[in-house]
Structure formats: C-alpha cells, structure tokens
Length: 179
Image (cartoon, rainbow, N blue to C red; front, side, top):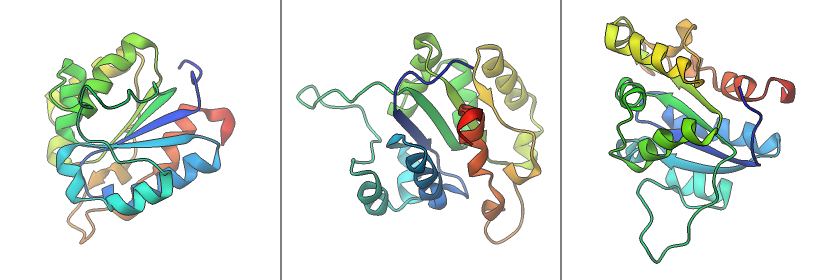
C-alpha cells in the first residue's frame, strides 16, 4: 500500500452495528496525528452521534456533495471505510458513485489515495458470491480489504457483534509502522 499523502484521514462510516462507536476510531486516529474528517453515508446519520463527532473533530460530518459556493475540502491522504456494509463494498467495487461517500471512494484508487475497508455484514451476506467477488476486485486495485476475522460478521447478539469490531485493525493496515 502506498504511503499516506498527507495528514488528512477521511473516515467513511456506513449504517451497520458498530457505527455508533466510530468515535473510537476517530480518537485512535487523532492520537496518531491524523486530522480526521468523518463522512457518513446518508443512512449512517441515524446510527452516529453527529454532534459528538463534530465536537471531537472540529469539523462538520459530511454526507452530501458540497454546494458550489462552499469551500472545497482538503484531499485526504488516506481513507478508512468502517464499518463498511454489503451495499457499500459492492458499489465501491463496481465504481458506483451515487452518494458523496461513494464518490470519494470511486476516485481514491485512481488518485493513489490509500484505502482500508473493514466490512461488517451478516453471515448470509458474507457468503454471497457478489460480495466475495467485490472484495477480490477491490484488492486487485490495491484497496486493503480486511475481512478475515469473525468479529466482522454480525450475529444474533443484541449489539450485533459490534463490541467485537476491530477498529484498531483499520489504522494498523493503513500504516503498520505507526502502531
């Protein structure tokens, strides 16, 4: 994986069980010197504490494209997608850019921006060939997809296994020398 191109880390959060705890990843990234921009898929806005994340980062949580009169945000040096849903993984692999988050992801490999994806799906979706193909396609493009841990599969537990989600893996996969 390429070295980070700057100190801007975009964390893209999707609507999945671990999403309410994305602040843990934000805090870990900030401790490692990253300036963090949280980008939420539209459904993820109902899963996260937007006000707390904005207070933590000092930036608005973004979920839509900017308006023409709004300033252009800095280009990320790296992107982490966590938790990544079945839908987001598949759309990213196919180059679909129908949301702001997916638009960022669609461009990232072509711009040489390192991307780490930590999916969180249920066992039925994890076994689907389209999902497995998408993981293979993303990896072939240099995207680091971390999906080899049972902690990333939703279960019938009340919190859907979210307490086991490996947030720390995202940063270690992005920059192994900073852990």
